[in-house]
Image (cartoon, rainbow, N blue to C red):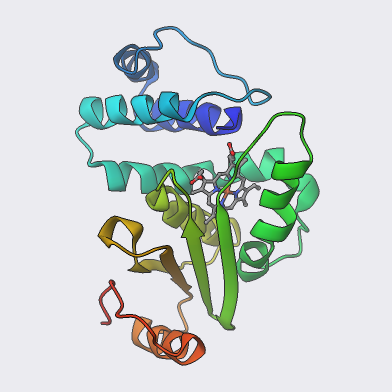
Length: 206
Ligand code: HEM
């Protein structure tokens, strides 16, 4: 996993808690005193060990912790990969460009072997995006937080929810982002129409 994710996790912990908490998390994750840099790659297992320690030490449940982290880390990612981002993009345009422009560049542009997840983003309506996420890492909670963070980036208060989830047996997670002009019910109706409603939704429809 890309070093920027580890650096982002450290910043998230130090900002949300404090430096000694990060020290304890590193210790709990079996990497006491280890420093991370954004221009290196580290084992996925190391990130998962740090997350597990963070859950234990903070007492915050893993899905909520990962989601908060995803939301927090967007500005850090945008800073590092700003070259691929057009400043005039809205949240929806940024989401639409993640896979082809950003994640794809990560797969091919670097000497390090990054493996960002396969995501697909569809503009369902002007205020509705459907993001499908598939990765063996099963970090959909981070993905949900990233979508929320992209809303923050554009000063747009998005409602972000999952219709289907890998953790509940779906082959891919379906994450929906809805702006304040649209309801969840309308978004689900539009998505059902677009996707022929061919599976039962995991998320609630209210
Ligand atoms: C719709 C928005 C996005 C979603 C759903 C998404 C999803 C994710 C997730 C869940 C991961 C963790 C690894 C995994 O699950 O396999 C990840 C990795 C990553 N993403 Fe994205 N992402 C989004 C936007 C962005 C943006 C805006 C950037 C940069 C500006 C970015 C750069 C990265 C990087 C650097 C990694 C680490 C890749 C690696 O180590 O292989 N992502 N992405």
